[in-house]
Image 1: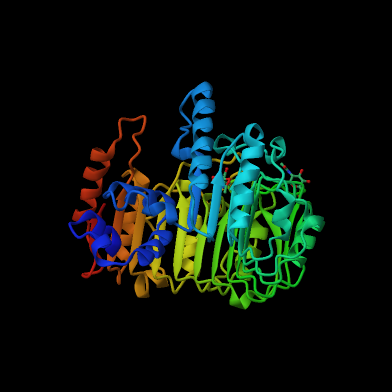
Image 2 (image 1 turned 90 degrees about the vertical axis):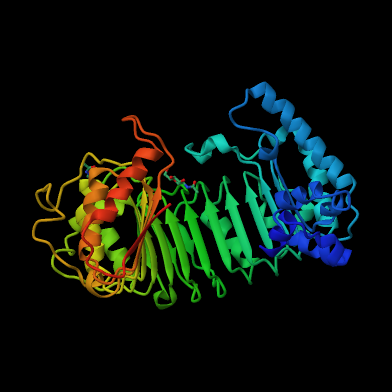
Amino acid sequence: MKLKMAMAGNEDLSEVLPECLLHIIISFLPFKEAARTSILSKFWLNLWRATKNIEFHESFFVKPEESDATQVMKRRVFIHFVQQWIGNYCESCIDKFALAVSKPENFVADIENFIAFAIAKGVKGLSLDFSDPTWMEDDPKNHEPLFDLPSHVYEHGVLESLKLFSCKIHIPAIKIFSLLKDLSLGWIELQEKSLKALLQHCPLLQSLSLTKCWNMGHFYLSEPSLLLKKLAIENCSFHDPVWIYIKNAPRLQFFKYSGKVASFDLDYLCCWEEADLDFGLESSFNGTADLLYNLLLDLFSVTILSVCSFMLQVISNSRESYGTAFPLNVRHLTLKTALHGHEFSGITFFFDNCPLLQTLTIVLCPARNFPDYEPPFEFIHNFWTKNLKVYKCLRRSLKTVEVKGFKGTANEFLVLQYLIGLGRVMERLNIYISRETDDNGGNVELYRERAQMLLQLNKASKKLQISIY
Ligand SMILES: *[C@@H]1O[C@H](CO)[C@@H](O)[C@H](O)[C@H]1NC(C)=O
Ligand SMILES: *[C@@H]1O[C@H](CO)[C@@H](O)[C@H](O)[C@H]1NC(C)=O
C-alpha cells in the first residue's frame, strides 16, 4: 500500500532505497504491477525485469471478444514477448513462474523452453495453465490436454507449489515432490488410483485443489495426508451416485466442494473451520435432501459456511429437518441466492440453526428453478411478515449483514425489511449495488434509489448503520 502511495505520489522510492531492496519489493508485487513500475521514470524502466515473480498470461494480449484470426496473431505476439523477456532476464534464480496460454499445440517448443528456463532458475512455484477461458461450461472429457509436462519437471524436487491445468501429467514418472505444499490440478483425467499414487509423493502437502478433473470414479482421500489443511473439489466428473470419502486428513480445516450432490463420508471433523458448498451442477432434488441434512450435521464445527440456492431450496424437505433444530457453530454464513420464494424456508432454516451467527453475506445470483421442487408448506406471499419468528441469532448475535449485487427487487426488500425490523443487535448493513442492467430497464441509478428507501425503514437496533456502495 505504502509503495503504491509512494509511486503515485511525488516521492521517488529510487532515491530513498538501495537497488537490491527495490528488487525485493518488486518481486512482491503482482507481475502486472511490477511491469507498471517501468513507466515511473527512466531509472525504473528496467528494474521490474529483475522480479523473481514472473507471470505471463495470454489475456495481457489476447481478448476473448476478438476474432479468431486476431487472437492467433496476438497469441504469436504474446509468445514472442515471453521469449524476449526471458532472453533478457539476468537474475540467477526465480521464485515463481506462471504461464497461461490456450492452444499450446502451436508453440510446444517455445513453451518447453520457457519451462526449462524456470527449472534452470530453481523455480519453487510453477503454474502452467493451457485451458481455454471459453470452456467454462463444457464437459472436461471433451478437452484432452494438448501439452505434456516435460520430463525434467518430475525431478525438480524443490517445487513448493504446482498448478497444472490442461497439462498432461505422467504420475509414475514423479520421483518425489518432497517439499510440495500446494497442488492444483485441472482439466485432466485423474483416476482414483492416480490420485492415490500422486499423494504418496507429496508428504508435506497442505493444499489440494482439483478443478474439472474427469474419470475420477469416486473421490477417495485415503492416503495419510497428515498436513493437509485445504481441500477443494470443483466441478469434477464422478460416477453416479457420487461418493466423497475424506479419511486420514486430521488437520483439514477448509473444504470446498462444487458439483453434484454426493454421499459424504468424512472424518476428523472437529478441526474443520470453513466449508463452501455449491451444488450448482445438480439438476434434480430427488433423494438429495437427507444427504444434505446429514452433511450439515457433520459440519458441526465449521464457523464459516457458504451455501447455494440448491441447498436453500431442498434442505427443508429433508425428513429430519422438521422440528429438530440442531445448532451449527456458524458465525459467518454466506448465502448464494436469488431470494426467490422457493428459498425462503431454507433461509429461515439457517437462521434457526445458526444461533451464534454474527455475519450474514447475501450474494445475489440468478434464480434456478427445479421441476421437482415441493414447498415444505404452502408458499405464502406474506412469509416474512406473517407469524413472525424472531430467531435467536437476530435477538443476540447478528451484527453485520452484507448484500452483494443488490437490485431492489420485491423479495430483496422483504428479506431486508425483516432483518432491519427484527435484528436487535445489528450494527452494519452494507449494500453493494449490482452493476448489471436488466431487461426491465433496471440500472445502477434505479437500484441505488431503491436502496435509499431502505434508510426509511423502522430499525430494531439503534446502532444500525446502513451504507450503500
Ligand atoms: C462450477 O460450476 C458452476 C455451475 O455451472 C459454476 O458457476 C462455477 O463457476 C464452476 N466453478 C469452476 C471452478 O469451474
Ligand atoms: C429418484 O431416485 C430413485 C433412486 O434414488 C430412482 O429410482 C427414481 O427413478 C428417481 N426418480 C426420478 C423422478 O428421477
